[in-house]
Image (cartoon, rainbow, N blue to C red):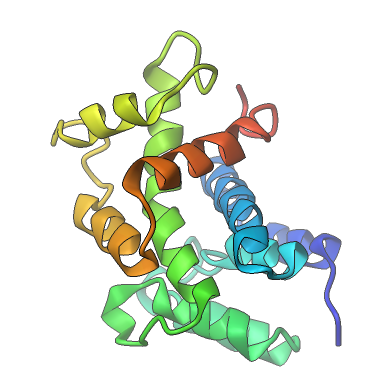
Length: 182
């Protein structure tokens, strides 16, 4: 059964009411869509993975991401999406073997960090550069809940240039800046 973005968005809205979590999901979706062509993969499928990766977090934080993946399996989402979502949470122990899984892990925390940084910049996402992101990543007190180690692990596992990765995620978020409230 093929799912559409509309299906995925309806599912997200069914489980998530937090505006900030919806915006985070949209940001990760955009970053995943930006990476899909790099690997010759389906932007729609990768986008849905990003959109739904935290769908259970608000309602079932102690069961995240297991509860969400169970719901996705019930609704016929592909195994690749489910495995990537399981793998984006290190405590599951699920290895990130596919490019989709590696990308999801690499863009998740970084998307949140870039979103947070945009909120304190006078021009928000406009004109943001990797240099600014890297500088602020060193500030432990800024966006303190965002795991810097996971950002670095994701970049390393993906095997991409750090600046190129940050730039790709910035550009992805810029492409949906209105949806993110900027």
